[in-house]
Length: 257
Image 1 (cartoon, one colour):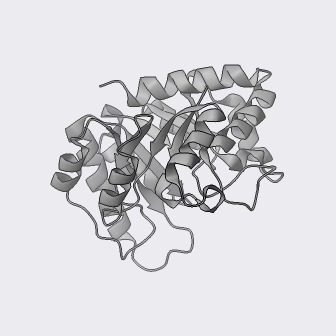
Image 2 (cartoon, one colour):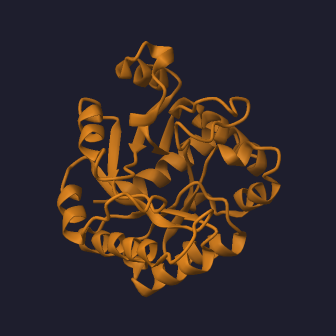
């Protein structure tokens, strides 16, 4: 049985299910996905997302504001702490830094990141980190803000082994998405070969980044099986063993409270 450690269920394409969210979740359950973490990207859409998943016990949530969009309102520490006071909420994020295609003074991203880390420390909940072309600043801010107190996950990891090591030293897990199945991702596959099995997570980032053989199509949590299969091949394991290990890791990180 699989756990999809990072997805955006409120953005998944429901056209194949005639717009029926419950049918989509049923299809994922039938494919062996027993739990999903639906990750927030802004405060504006959070209430509707939380209401959408409320009837489904297999869906957990996080709260946070994505680093990419300057137009999204930056929360206060107090807002994040209040929203995280929810039995279904298990994490703060996604948050982090994204310098890809970013221009000008990006201090607003760094301050937004610090706010999330402070909220995570106040709640004791782990962080979900998004980082792209911001390796040094991501690690520096995590260290400066004492993020090791709560740890978390480097989601949709695409960075170097050195960054993975540095993050794991601060108590972070490394999560692999469908990117690890792409033909041009050999450097990432090498990282996937080396991450300790007790620090490995799998995800879809649905509806984005569908794995091979679904690449270019809308993604769904059930395609996490292809991520597990690829990692199993890299590690000389059965797919079921990767599913078991990554699910245990998910429980250890997110359900520790």
